[in-house]
Amino acid sequence: MEAAHAPVFTAPRQRGLTLIELLVVIVVAGILMGWAVPGLQAMNARQEVVAEAHRLRMALSLARNSAITRRSTVVVCPSPDRQRCHMDDWSASLVIVLGPLSGDDFAPDALLRVLEGGRGVSVSYRQDGKPVRFTQLGRSSGHNGTFRICGRHGQGAELVLSNFGRARAGNAIDC
Image (cartoon, rainbow, N blue to C red; front, side, top):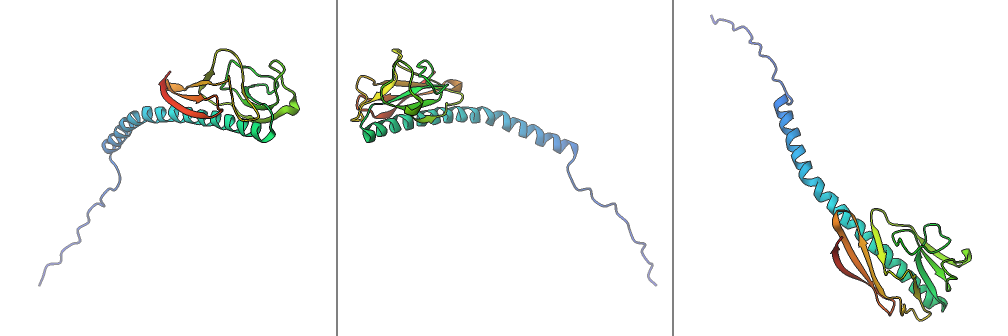
C-alpha cells in the first residue's frame, strides 16, 4: 500500500514592488525630470519669441493690406489702453488705426483691429517714438526698422520691416 502524502501548503507569492524598487524608480524619475525640465523651459521660451514675431508680422500685414484696400493711411502702434499710442512698449496690445494720428491719440471709430499683447517677452522698435504708418500704396516709407523681440532665458529674434512695407524674419539674437 502506498503511503498517502499529506498535501503541502505553500505561502502565496507576494506580487508588487518592494520599498527598494520603489525608491530606485523615484530616483530615476527625478534624474530624468531634472534633465528634461531645463530643455522644456528653453523650448517654451523659444516658442514665446516665435509667437510674438508671428503676432507682429500679422499686425503689420493686416495694416498694410487695410491701407491698400481702403486707399488710406493706416497706423500700427502699441496701445495698452486702446485710446492712444504708447510707443515705449511694443509688447503691449497692438492697435491698427485708420487715418493719421493727431499726436498720439486716435478716435475710437478709427480703430480697425486690436491684437492682444504678448506674454513673457519684451519688444522694442526704433528709438524715435513713431508708430508704423502704411500709405495707400502699402509702403512704410520712412518707417522701416527692426523689431527686437527678447524672451526668457536669453532667447530672442529680430523682425525687419522694409520701406516697401514687408516684414521678414531677421536673425536669432541673444538678449
